[in-house]
Length: 617
Ligand code: ADP
Ligand code: ZN
Image (tube, rainbow, N blue to C red):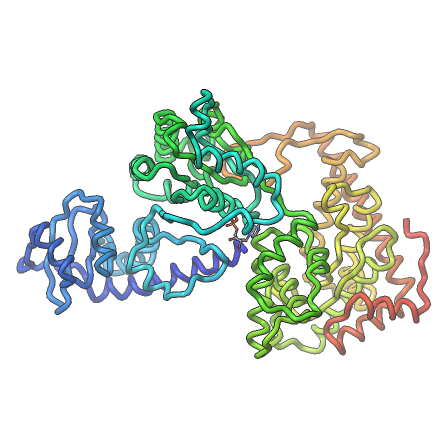
């Protein structure tokens, strides 16, 4: 989902860049002395009379070139008017920022590529994720010119709690906030302090924005939203003043909800970050804290913020009277996924063979956004096929699309490559199928998808996913399965012929082995201790400098243990596949012929073959 959006974002930026190159070539700021200077008030009047088609603002916001409908140009000295953008937008004036003048044309050319993206992207163009995961229609180039407001205000969101599914706990906690907003008097009468800030914590796409909107919708109050990254990506000093603006607006419209997405972009621990602090961000954060302290909870403004990284937030944000409530919004479990699917299936015509229950079972780990996206993709596939209903086939395809990106059916593949990929995937699948205590194979495909030449899908067990508990034997099997592809290549083509196609697999194996030893205490030599502090991903800021908390000796032991684990897994995979070479051949043949095979095909194959199931442990 996120990746998708990033792509759309890039696309939009690309469009902006193209436009900008256009403008920088044709509308180069003229330096001739004959330029007419407009008075600011006349300029505004002309805008309101719709006589102006385009305005090129200087990077320092001091002057602008004005292009009238008839093409004539003039210049205006801009007054510090914060309504200017609004007025321009309302009157359909196309807005752009001119690049700073540079010495040589080459620099100018380069800068016209870089500057506009930064400046326009930051200043006037606010790329908001559309609510339902659609591109939101409209021409991206248009929305650029018409400069969206940075602060989004929805007088009434029309979203209710019934639109948000599978996050019952979070809804329950937020019901209280709705009550506060609806009848604050009831609470103030008995001296209860109304909370000012609620922090929603959870991975992207789990419905945090949707929940915040639902709170506003349920309470019938306006919804303001801004993203933390929009506070800080700008010119110096803008972040803090935006925070002031935001609260000014909110106070005027109280009671209301103010939603700050990605609060970690502003709220990261002060003093963290590489190369010293980021003054701009700290000023913004300080302003936010000041504003939050400055209004009484009873003013009717409730700030809802969202983050995926509560651990990096500055502790000052969590003090009483600020974001003192935290609500966790997790990935939905099976029941939650089913509810979410039902919500999003409402506006789609599904044929009877679509079993949402099965879909919910097949999609552990999916977020609400993934599920919404899945059904939407399925509907698009159905429309492309000219069907009047979405059938099971499209839903199945959509699940895989969401997991691994669209198939690249038209990519030309040589027969040799095809055979190699077939053996590689069959290797994964066969090791997986023959290992006791491993997830069942759902599907094997040699149609390229995303970066992958082929894919083997397993159905992860819900229990394992939910509990997060993986047994040692499961992890050992996982390593063997991941090595299965490479091993099959070796067995069939010889060690000299192996390809780089397994690099992902090898990475995965190494990760699993290292975690088993340093995190899960599954090494006899090292014992049940957790080593190394930063187990999460690396982020700018705090984790960057995390140090190793073990000795060189231990490090060496870990390396030995890792390679031992990998070695054992490698031997097991080799044994399974060489014991069952004929089954491997047959599976590869099936793949070459049909390109995809599923659980039943594999079961058939195993039933009719002489399978050797030795004790592979
Ligand atoms: P977040 O703010 O957590 O990144 P969003 O609220 O933006 O996630 O979710 C994006 C979209 O995904 C929503 O507009 C909605 O269509 C869908 N969605 C996400 N979570 C849920 C949910 N719990 N119930 C229903 N739809 C959901
Ligand atoms: Zn592989």
